[in-house]
Amino acid sequence: MTVRGAEHLSHERLRAALRDGARVCQFDYCLSAVLLTVHRQSDAIFIPADGWAGVRALPYTVITLLAGWWGVPWGLVLTPAFVWSNSLGGRDITDAVLRQLDEGTDS
Image (cartoon, rainbow, N blue to C red; front, side):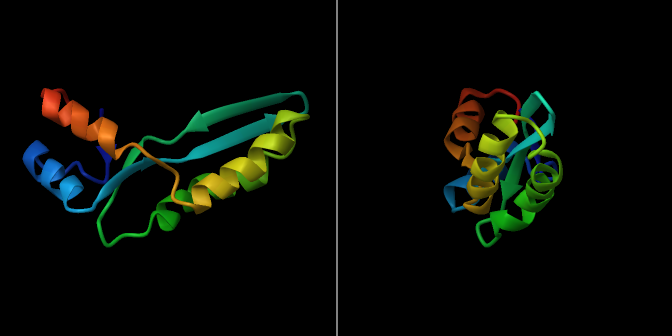
């Protein structure tokens, strides 16, 4: 798994940063057109311990606000849900990334 924003960190430094309060999050977004709504997730994104996930969520929230509403019915349902989820910091996948690092797989 590639973690955007942590490419410069070795596995050991990434593991240490995550144990010291940094997080890895994913953000949801959707694109809609009439009867079609497509749900996608961002790549895994590194959030430093002193960082704010809202800044990293902003592009996905804007995409959803601009292009998510237009699908019936799922665009109308998913758009507010994803905006809310992203505003709360997205989906925290730090534990899964730590498990992968501990197992010795790619980060």
